[in-house]
Amino acid sequence: MRGRTVDSTLVAAQDFPADIAALDRTLSSIEAVLDPEAKLREIAELQEQAAAPDLWDDQANAQRVTSRLSFLQSEVDRVKALRGRIDDLSVLVELAQEEDDAATLTEAEVELKKLQAEVEALEIRTLLSGEWDERDAVVSIRSGAGGVDAADFAEMLLRMYLRWAERHGYAVKVLDTSYAEEAGLKSVTFEVSAPFAYGTLSVEGGTHRLVRISPFDNQGRRQTSFAAVEVIPLIESTDHIDVPESDIRVDVFRSSGPGGQSVNTTDSAVRITHLPTGLVVSMQDEKSQLQNKAAALRVLQSRLMLMKKQEEDAQKKALAGDVKASWGDQMRSYVLNPYQMVKDLRTEYEVGNPDAVFDGDIDGFLDAGIRWRMQQAKPQS
Image 1 (tube, rainbow, N blue to C red):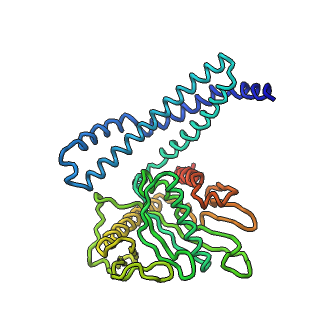
Image 2: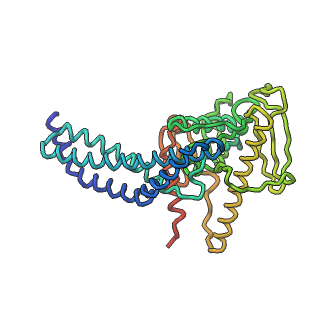
């Protein structure tokens, strides 16, 4: 047994040079897109701004400077570290092959797989080049057809995204929650703060479908239910989206929790209706009416900004004669009965472990969605 293990390792080692060369080429193409030298120049400029004694006189700008500086530094460090590890792996393999060292080759094989996964993840980042892809994301989930099962499904999706963010160490802030009568959620809106949160999560937008034996049906029948996911980029203070007071109606009401119980004894929750478009945004998770109004206005501005961009894109496609269908409404199915599967209907990416998906393991779906979107954006020959 021992001899066969060594032999197979040594045979596999013959592929190391080609695999390492492929990694090197991929990282070089990533470096060409990310342009570490340009990032280093921006880092130097930001470091000068960060060193200014009056930096924190303007807290919003200080936050922007320090956040951008931290992000750029981590990006440069990440590329530099990967380059160093690829070089080290090449040397390690060369020495192991010279000494016919199977144990070291096994160690190198483990490192190779880790590097391939990390370089692939970084390659996905280079595909996020949209105007707002770098932004934080505002995600809204709304239960659809399916009654109490749909409301429960909406809550399952919320937990899925919260667990995904937790896995990656991303900050999440729930902005508004509307609980259903019996169980689950009518709707929820939350903010994800992370580099490229919008670009990454934007591929989740659309209608999600759940098929399962309903835990709410005493006859144990199979139920199909739906939930809609909307993802928009978070507006920044430097964006200019003019929303005149005459264009909005502001209603205030008391926040409520599960079962309709009062969470707040004052009318602190806010609902803003944008009269020209009919867009409605509610906020109740902040402590004061003023804070809720500010949060609601910011989300409204984000939605208006995205709406404007979508209209511009539609006009461009019409002028170009592009008649391809846009992303379909129903984009993913979660099947728990009669078999176990989660499948994205656009990319054909699927897994057979729904429990892991609902526990936040959605990176495979996100990566496949980003690649699919990039492929769809390419001119058709």
